[in-house]
Length: 231
Ligand code: DC
Image (cartoon, rainbow, N blue to C red):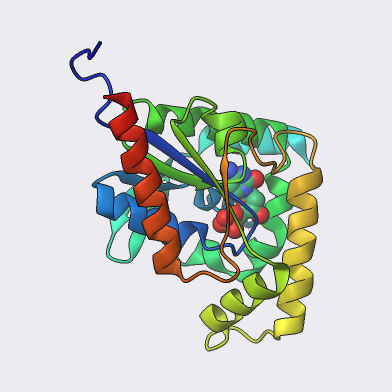
């Protein structure tokens, strides 16, 4: 039986390791469906930046708890994807620095940081029509998401993609990036609280030999199938 307003919008969770192309894919899928894109990694980065500025280390749970409770994080659709604000300050480019990138997995392992951000993420998804990318969205934050994608690619491929993205602006070698990505995988997979795992009902997409466009189209197609099934 079809209830009015029942399912005309679903939630889509896109999880996977660093550099698999999640943000590009999620943003474009949201665009094509007229959905809202939510980059949860940006939230962990925003907390990391704020903590670094305040001199709070990842292994200071009490201070981190206070800091996380006291900041306001806003995501707004911007010119190039999504803009991120902390207490009204636009930190969109600051959260992409290597300083933040190298530390974020440690801060993301903190219990109160995860609790606060998880609650915020659930609120943002409550009205459906959201494409959310992260590590634990399908497995933990939105276990009822109608479509779950686990997007992955080989470490070499992911390092190469990131290298092409940042080589003009940041002094880093491909080898260094491979080591850093493998280390971030390890930290994200091995942390105690909601680690990066593939939800049992997720569709696994290995993008190693695929173009971004192919990945986007296959997710949009899966979404349309889900919507049709739900009618
Ligand atoms: O996707 P990203 O590289 O911007 O994510 C930054 C870090 O945040 C990543 O190393 C792990 C963490 N993260 C997380 O623990 N849970 C999420 N849902 C999203 C990101």
